[in-house]
Length: 328
Ligand SMILES: [Zn+2]
Image 1 (tube, rainbow, N blue to C red):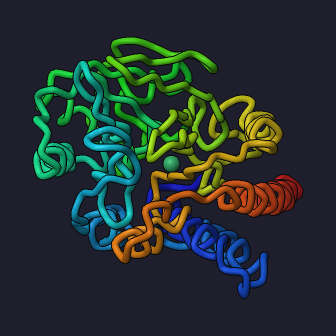
Image 2: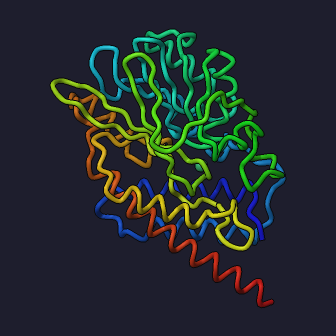
Image 3: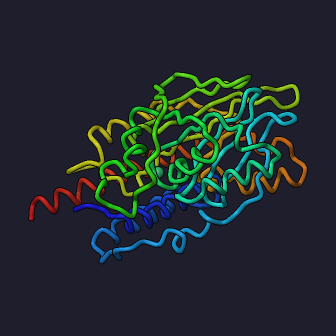
């Protein structure tokens, strides 16, 4: 059994519903998880179309959003330059700028335009970072690199997928491909990236991808320093956990990530799918006059608790399915 791009995509959609529910107290905790698992298991046995139209299936990933400053002082801090369904982030510094993630293939230009709208020159982007090497977050990096001339810094675990332009463990699934992009420097867990007056710390939170990288940085606003987290992801999506796993050690990696993040309580919690951290609501509250709308110390632990539950349920289901197939 293997999952291909269409099942992967619909499973991703299911995962989004987990996150959407994560801050809604009235939703039973398991309802989102059930959606995810249903969408995966139903599709595994389905006829899969050969071509997958991402835009038709995920219109929000392509829907433009006016870029904005999430938090910061003056022209410092962290900005949103993504789409409705994809979080891309812009960080200006005194010595050029940093961008985290490039969106879908073809969205490099969108990110550059968003940076220009904010009053900055995309040509001053010096460093590109990536949350993980899946096409919805890395697909636009090659174009963005060509437009800006920036260097790409990424984890060793995701380097082969970025440079090969594939989804690790699904190399022959062309619908999951992304334009290959060269990694100029690799970064390990706990290492930092400094440009001008800004330093980001890399946290390797593997599982969702082998080199899944979360980024933290301090953001100054008013008299306070806030710790911002751009979290990679910990959904299972359609990753194969058993049999021939997506990559060797994937189950241990997920569990390591859940253990490692258990006591994380960032002040500002940001995600590469904005729904995961309720960014649209926070943005509305900000526009209505709340300068601290993005301060959310409960959101991250709440999401991780749900994702861990979803992971264990997915693992159990995949094990049962695998055993049933092997017994046939
Ligand atoms: Zn992903």
